Image (cartoon, rainbow, N blue to C red; front, side, top):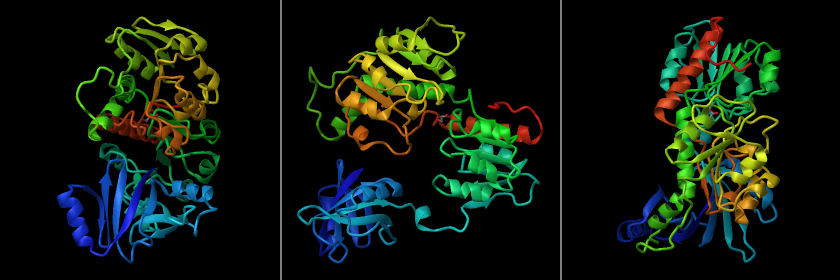
Length: 444
Ligand code: DGY
C-alpha cells in the first residue's frame, strides 16, 4: 500500500516541467491531464482542474483489485459509492470522505490485460499439430513450451496474471494434460471438469495446491519439479539470512532516503551469522543445501526431520522444542501438509531466543502469520525473512509495516537457469505420461 496526495493545477505543463526539471522529481505516471511524481515512500499528483474533485485528495494505492474490494468492505461506512473501473486513468477505485470531509480515494492501477476484456485469454500455438492437447495456465520459459509443441497441441494463457479457477474449468474439459502453477488451485471441482486429463504437471516442487488423492482416485498422475530448484532456493534462503541478520534492506532504505550521516558506532547493529547455530526444519534436498552453505560460516547445525536423512556433513537431529530453543537462525524447509500447517505458532515462537531469526522460503502457512506478527511487534524475535505467505499474494499490512522483516515476492527459484530447468522437467513429466512412460518426477 502507498499513498498519493493530489493537487489541482490550472497549468499542467508548467507544473510538470517545474517538478521534473527544477526539483528533479522522478515521474511515476504521466497522463494527458494528470502527472504523478515519486517522493520517497509517498507520491505527489497534479491533475487539471476538472480532473481532481477536491484539492488535497488523499489516494491510497493498493496492488490488486481484491485489495480494493477488501478496503471497500472494511470502509463501506465512509464510501461514497462502490468500486468501479476508470478506463481513462486505468484504475479501479472508490471514493470516500474523512471525518472533516476531505476527499479520499482507494484505488489500484490496472494492467492493459485487466482493462481489456478478452473473449479468450488462451492462445493455441500449433493448431491441429497433434491429437493430444495441453493447457499451460501461464506463460513459462520458451524451452518448455517448444518441447511441449512437439507432442501436444499447446493451449497457453496469454494473460499477464493467473487464470481464475472458473477460467481453468472452462478450458480443461478436452485437455489431456495440464501444466499449472503453484498458485493454481487444482481441487476436486477442477479435476471433475477435466474429462480426458491424464497428467497434472506442476511447475513447482511443492504441490499443496493440488488435490493429489482425488487426482489419483480419478486415475490422473500428478508430477512436480524437485531437484532442479534446490540450489537456487538455498541461495535465496541465504540472501534472506544475511539480509535479516545484518539489516541490509534497512541500511539500503536509510541510504536512499538520504539518512546516511557517515560511520556511526551504533548504526544498524545486527546479529552475527558466523559461528551461530542454524536450525533446519525439514532436512530434505533444500534443507541440506542450506545447511551445507552454513559450513563455510562455521555454524553448528541442528535439525528436525521425520526420517533419519543421509548427511555428508555434521548435524544433530533434535526435537521441535530444542530446535526452537537453540536455533539462532531457524530456516523452514518442510512441505505444507495437514501436519505442518501452522507448525510454528504462538507456543513455538515463545520458545525462540529474543535474538533469533526466522526464515521461511517453503510455504507461508507453515507459520501462523498472526502469531509471528505479534512476536515481531513485541520484539520477542530479532527478525524474520519471508519469501512465502499464508494467503499469497496478500500480505498483512501489519507485517508490511514492520522494520524487522525482510519480505520477498516468492522468488526462491527465480533464476533464469532454474526456471528454464523447471520448465524442462515439467514438460518432460507431461510428455512421459502421454507416451505411457515413467515420469521423471511423479508424486502419486
Ligand atoms: C516450489 O517450486 O515449490 C517453489 O516454491 C517455487 O519457487
